Image: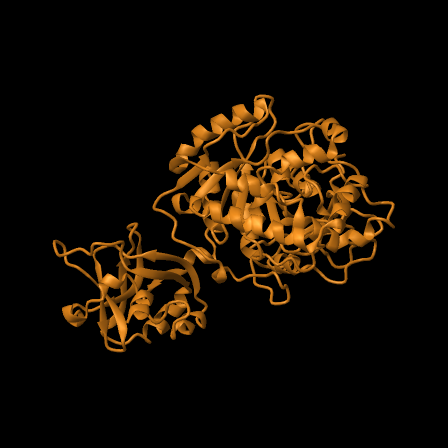
Length: 530
């Protein structure tokens, strides 16, 4: 008995769909119709009237819920011990914690009781228990998965996360979970996330400073650094702004936000965990001035970390600095918990996505969890890297079958014809530049036309022409191409990193040297200077 369940339910007949027959557990701060959502507090005994938005998505895709799982009360903790329903321990040691706050969900997955489980991850609550139970945990970009029907901890940072034993299963659930919810004020469309073209090949950033890990963790980390070269180039980067941002989470605006979410229940509810009460009560005394000071400091650290993401596809970090025992948590509940969040707390603050998965086991046989981080919107790239690390072949999703189409003129974001893409279901994938051999000419419209210089011809002395690459459903390509008037057409186009996509190209006979506007570097720059 590991105290992983709070409520079990009778399985229903699965609906047809991509998740047909897969079983799932729900962290008990996520609504399941007809079942109380306790958030780890037995006084919350009223059954939920409806499913959380994400639960509806999963059931409609064929998943079958088996019950609600234990958690650090009100999702406040990374230890998995702050629950009146009992503490959870790692499935690999009854002396060591399971990690929290999504403790029961991780145990249910790791023991094979369900195929996947939902948790939440505000400060690392999906990644830490995944690491301590040798499973995979995907923390999506904020807002990609609706949190409507989830008991808030920090509403501006809360993320619904998924855990599974393989990257492939977690990815299958993730594909269904990602959906825009107009009734969730924090929901975001994937196309609205700012993205930039990843460098060619995988470039993995690793810390250029020591991480002060426990000895067994440090040894596993050194082995992991060696394995990282299997993904591509490994470079050292300055992670100090990330680590400093992690220290902000339980101060200023975000502690006050926890107080706002459930502070009114702390004093009149004897079932509230004393440590949860102590932590969250501090949010009541924070002022608006201290909140704005926190926002300002976070903005400074976010700016300091920007250059990092121009150099790497992802940053590799341990999930935790060690693996505490239940006795260590009991002796120092707040201190141990604070140390556990050193590498996870900053991810939502800095608007990053993440995936946690098993690295090399420690010498004592306990799991060693690692994570890859990237800016919001790069979720699929991280999932792909984790799958490669794990030696998995991840099934394609609808996202993989979409056509990449580069636009350079009136179809760019904010330009007059952009709606022709949006109405056809296109989504912005990334910004990029063409190969340096392309030149841009002004053609009738006025419109820009891209023409490639013949082999041996002059090459533009610059980084290529600015383009946006959009994901377009295959069924929409023919209709969209029919809207393109000569001398422009849709044809092959090479990006600066060598990738081939479709794009707007111009016939050579319309490339008038007197109307060469290549020097502007892009259509927006040309318009601004004309």
